[in-house]
Length: 442
Image 1 (cartoon, rainbow, N blue to C red):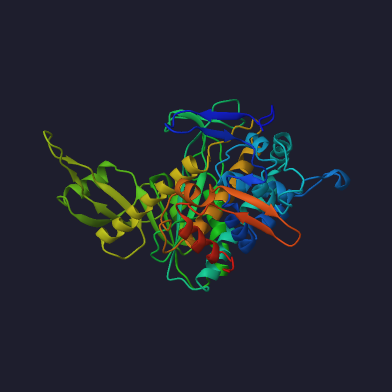
Image 2 (cartoon, rainbow, N blue to C red):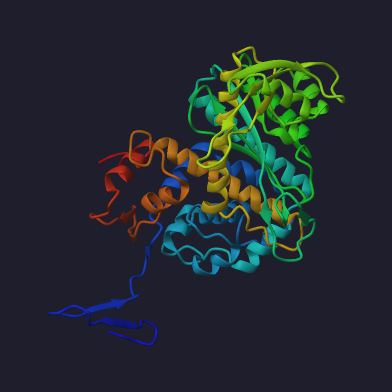
């Protein structure tokens, strides 16, 4: 029966019949894969640990939504493609999202509204955000320490700034000439273990748009090194960054921390003369800029670019390093940091890292940390999909194949049954991942 509350749509494009569409299925959701995220979150205890970093000064008698529930609602929502707190109004009665935060999917209270989430985001203090950042990093490191049984041949830290364009009156948004826009400038850190292809997000720091490349990098790297050395005490650490970090203060810091380093170096006439002697080959030299405390090894790739109809052009590349590998091998190691661009694209285009539209600055780093937590869960999901078609899928593809799945919820006295489509295209993969995150067959 069609009522004002349940509108009906009739499609007459079929030759022998007509198709009727009604939005009348209660206890149903389009995010059936949220249960996978919930299982991963329970394994990592990520939202529990992050919630412990946020003091709750609300009157306990008036609290309807615990801090952990608010975190889960936003983090799981981001993973499922709901980029902003405004989307909360569309999810407050979704049975799977209620189940994910620990409520009864049918009779449980509605989730938090957009105003509640906005107040939550704007209540975060700088001290709490610092604790959350440290906790996120320690959770990621502990996850991989458990996965690798505390043993690794090498850990590589990549640091890379990225632009976060702003379009309003956000505090500390400044014009950046390099990116030619008003923006924030987040600094992203990832970890690579041994020779694995995946770079695992471990930290993000949101910085003002006019920040130099190294702003905040010393403290961030010092904290990461301390945590990594506790978790992997005998494992060498390598730091890989671009030319924006190639100052004497940074290089002295890396040497004092006793880490391997591979740092891009900008071209200058003196280095260009060395490159000119190599005639398209790789080589090395001892070099010291005027501001450097001593000479260091610089690997040179004397690249020559040839384009049809143009004269060959020299395009030399320089890397300062304390590695003792051959120059070609050093440059190959440096080039591997290019994979960082794929991590940044996933954060921007798959998880809306740039949705930092709060006018108050400290609410925006909080949003960035929520995005980072969602990405940590999705990277863990991708790991559990090893050996399937989703093993190397990007965030948006993971979401499409494993999370955006129609489900009808049946609630009885003893159990909750999730009815998923038998014809789901990625049914086999979903089943394998579910078992990998702790579901029991049968």
